[in-house]
Length: 260
Image 1 (cartoon, rainbow, N blue to C red):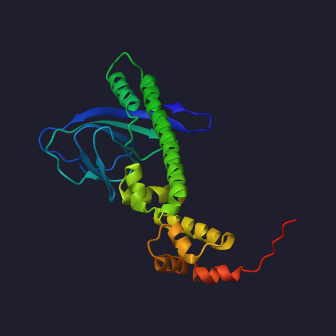
Image 2: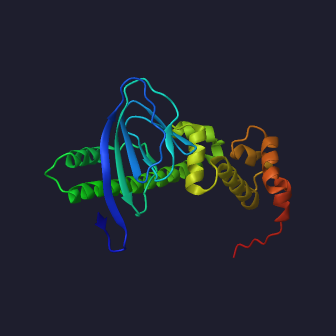
Image 3: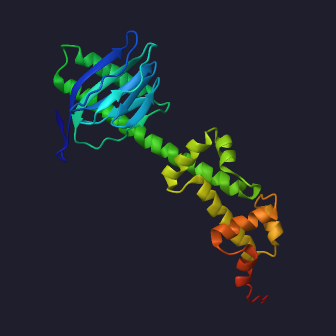
């Protein structure tokens, strides 16, 4: 067992390398330890309580103690994965990982598998090697969050540069190479607002700017926001602001202009 100054601990339990033979489905069970599963061949269909996961090659899932997990679909093709059990009260950095930076953790799992099956190594060596795996999960989590933030920032910048061209969620998804439903949910997870809603907010902001700071007509503004028909813009603005664009502009018609 490894103990830390803050009173937290980590201890290795067991590790193995599973290879299916014929048709296979993960057994139903609930265990006391955490378990990491990293697939390196085939597909694993596994659920934890009522949430279902599909794990393919180089994808990882962390199962939690005392939560029932089970296979929900039988596979017939060859399936193989590393499984690693451990105990800790440290914060678990991630639930799953399907990124590309997986090779270091695969090597660490293979190394721990070797250590645990070699009599020359002590239990302390297995604890240390196991803890390195948890640290690698921390690194993957931090880099994934950083990457997510970077992508969200790129999406926001793309919207800012294309808002006048009538950009849509589908346009954004195509530009960044993602499914429209996925990128909408992703954006909401990062910013707390759906991508469609975010687009509407940005369009309203720009429309108000045009209405209040330029002499553009409503027709010109609708074209400037990428609308093919003026009425579509009027309906959009009125729905979100509960006032027509013309009425909004009229509310702020009084001004004072000086040139000295």
